[in-house]
Length: 130
Image 1 (cartoon, helix red, strand yellow):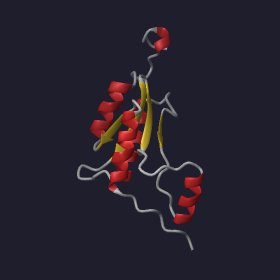
Image 2 (tube, one colour):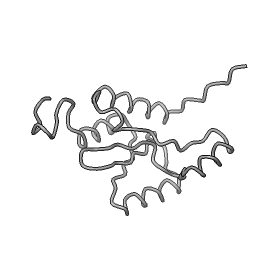
Image 3 (cartoon, helix red, strand yellow):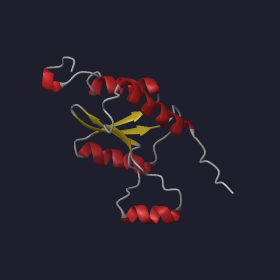
């Protein structure tokens, strides 16, 4: 029998929406936004992933912004970070990296607008169209 599909949570829908928006706004920037695989599907897979470098609490996504790396944690408007997520946020910020808690597509859009040049511009051409 076929496996049942994983339940799509509100946070999953938010992440999917954020990724779709990024792809629409920045079609030539594939690879600059990616998910961090931090939710193993079983304890067996978790044990293997830990041996491969899995770290509990890591942000959901990473954005390679124009001025640096930004770690993005996605939560619904009422969602709360776990203690381990807060500890990882502190690790990031102490190391000098940006960490953003995003709760809506609008917040994500604003983050993109502040951290990526509009599609079709390049620092090599002084910001003009390519």
